[in-house]
Length: 182
Image 1 (cartoon, helix red, strand yellow):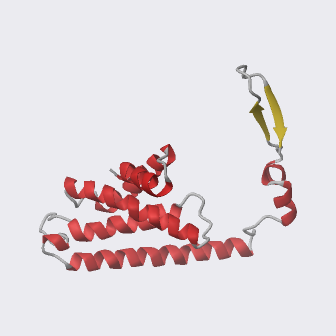
Image 2 (image 1 turned 90 degrees about the vertical axis):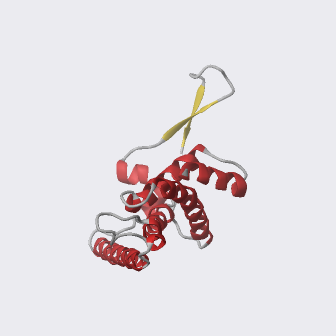
């Protein structure tokens, strides 16, 4: 459902649906169902799939508009999608064992508060550890290459390889290519 929902968002807001959108939507659905999978009913899982893609889709657009450099939309898909799944669990969790873990719609609204606390703790922990790792790398081995290496290209400076691309020139014969060096 999440894959179809993402493609619908693409079609309506970008003018076309893409296979990449299908895959990204499927990942968003898998991320969102992870915290909820043992606690929600099938119909709620379907609704989660339908709703998570628009949430992640518009989050990705929002972060792009802010100028955030996240070429794979990882934060919008994994962080926002995971938080959406955890929030959904607080709403739609059904009785497990003694019923204490039921969600807000099943008579235990405090579960939604516990879910918000878990989401906040996850975001805080991830921010703190990521900041510590980046600072450690920055002051030990560095987190950027030199401007010289960047201009030469990382394929050359880091890997010692010169990339070549083949461009087919209007022929049915696949061997009729013109190598192009970058």
